[in-house]
Image (tube, rainbow, N blue to C red):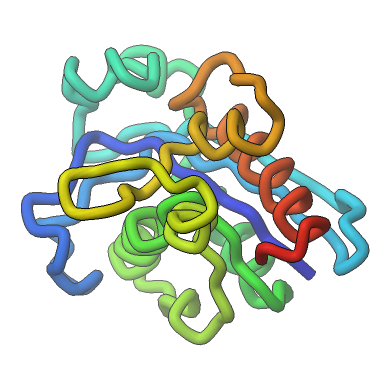
Length: 189
């Protein structure tokens, strides 16, 4: 079973190398989207949740990127504990976790688990990062060799087409899953 997930947040960490236990370092979760697939690539379930901010606001800079303001999140959002209790159960069931920029998304979700007093079970799972694992496949020049591909760049490389609404977790996770299954079909992952 494969669990794909993506997050939108209040911003970026101050220190990318900080442990997940440094809760002041890791931004807050604003949106969580996931897709759950069986091993044959059949979609079993999915979810897309805006989180109701409790004890934090969403900075304007972050809102400009993903389109979720504090006001919208208060109006449309769900309680973090409710969303993460269900997601925690799915992680337990999943064999493999997949994300584009796993090192960021796993820390965001892991920090929120810890804030809620839940065990961070992400570390015990096999993980695949479609960003790190496709650097040599995409071969995009960067200042120090090939750079990590953005999801839109990977999607374009595989399908010669872009996709709309990047930085909406629900849209991004659908694109991630589409890329993953094509990479698997091609034998790249």
